[in-house]
Image (cartoon, rainbow, N blue to C red; front, top):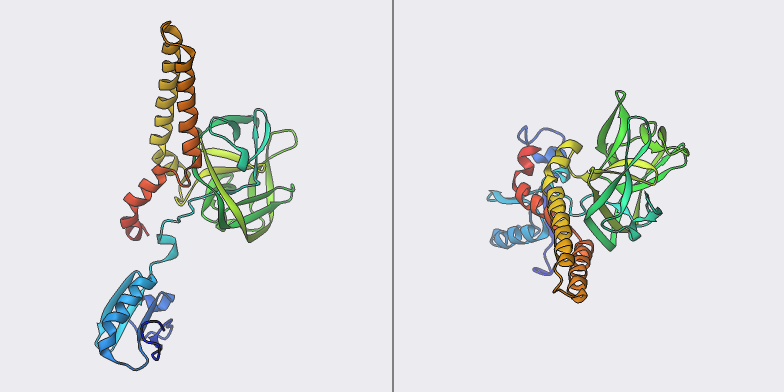
Length: 308
């Protein structure tokens, strides 16, 4: 409309199920269109192709002299900018009691796993992979027969009971009747039945990363990872983050010991070190998306279509 006020977009081919195209055509999956202008003026097609690119199509080319072909990748092949997150009011159990996601801090120890004997184990929060107070996101809402209600993004990994073992799967693949792992009143492992699955949009996203790579949120055992179908692979990929956290913690501990041993350094210097440490942690917490998953997306993005 802005480029040519008196001209309309003309779609000559869209979704097709009659077999008029090549066997691998994206028209059969509704991911391709053939377009012209309503006046069929071929001199406009160069600009029309440019507008199609700016509109967000992944592939645009002159398929013939009579039209322009445009297509898009599968949604599942594109890294999700939301990463995988929980909602702000989701709760976790720490050594000091229950906390909401919005109040959780790096360094807090949270319930993250179930031991073989069914008891709970704690793990330290070492980073936030995503933290955005104002973002509106569509969450999967899972309700169980044990009154648990969990909100997590669609491509976040959750453990469900499958073939008598815990299997990580996307939240959007959980169905009513599936068994998932929950915390009982006696703080032990319990299988609960999913009674309702729905979608809703809420504000605030939080993705804490623990040393163990898992966490119990709203009483339900889930992974800290998303976008990758294998929890074990994701945990391996994030080894550098865990390693850097160990190095950072060790370095800070050594610096504090050295500062206490050196008599000629006053308390102000020690306070400065503590302030720097706190600033570093706060800076990481305020960062909307952690630098490491951003780096992974940048490296992997060109190969997503190949992996698909």
